[in-house]
Image (cartoon, rainbow, N blue to C red):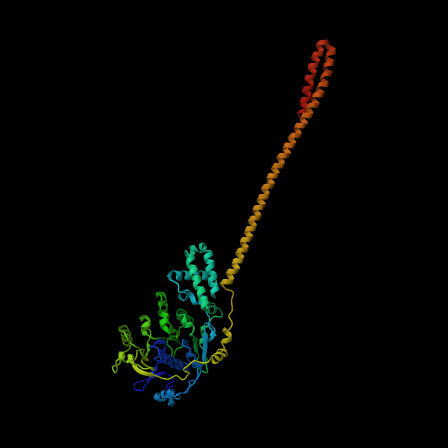
Length: 531
């Protein structure tokens, strides 16, 4: 309000404005403080000012009161006192609503926000599923198989179908991907089923969020994208991992832009301590990399948490802009934490930072922003300006109207189920069954044909033997008959020959003729019958 080229957040004890340089806003920041000390107001004032500059903003609405930014604030005696205190009237302060797009991964309090299993990736999905290191490695292998096989993993049923397929064909994949434990696949599958009961079958679907839809303006003001997290926050891993996924999408989608006069987008990561709870080294390295490199994409990230010690030192070191609200120290450990927070600021000789942090009232903070030269400014005690938007929540009717008036509502309203891994593996299963049935049928037919051929061959052999035996029997019968005929004829001829010889030689001739005739006849007919 005071200067359009700077972000006016607060006034120091000398009643001088405390500014955040827009070109330093993508150097990231920390907004910390105990519950009830004013962090939400700080976030809203910063978001309003970024929007005024045409910079789109992302915010998570954990308590349900951030959505009030769509509506003008309501005047009150307290607000008038704050307006007078800061002298805001002379700078044209007025209550106003801001352009807001409401999102919800459950599709109940905002436009349905979805992503796909493939876009989430194995690292983040393993965290949502609560997998151990071995199970996470196997999930990564499953994603690699999907990539190699050209299988699109859109929803949870795609992933379950692929897990079942790999389990059934584990021996086929072992040579290329190593042994895949059936027990681990079972654990992963059960974790997916648990996720589905928490809404996983709703937010893993198409159409997936196009992160570029966040980069919108309304009459020159940057769109404030608000993710309703009042339900999502109940699943801390899902909440923090989903926000990290969105941040990663920004990092992977946006081009390098170098130093800009103002950010392309500002991302507020509320309840940031949840992101680092029970985190693996691999995921921490990914977060460090994203935070370090995303500023070159023109995105500023502001971690909001109760206790600055919840943020790892490697990440804190990359946060150049700091707003520290009041902390309480009831134990030696608390005092140590407050001391560490105080020591992270550039010292101001006018006050003791440690004591000041312990005694800050609601709406007060110690602040240090990067100067135009990139050097952290001396810490200042300051009072944060009041927001121009509604401090509380909006009604369900107002929320519903805001959701449906968005041009993005129709784009994401209806889920689609594209042809992906589940459908492909179903078809493949049917094809495999048909191929197996055809093979079994062919093998059965071949076996039957072989058996029939063998039976025919045996029958032919049997028939041949029977015919041979019959022929042999017939031959024997013919020979017997022939022998009988021969013997009869031989006797007749022999007697005739013997009679003739006997007439010629007398009594001796009869004997000789009989012998000669019989022998001659037997020889002649024996030779004949052999033929």
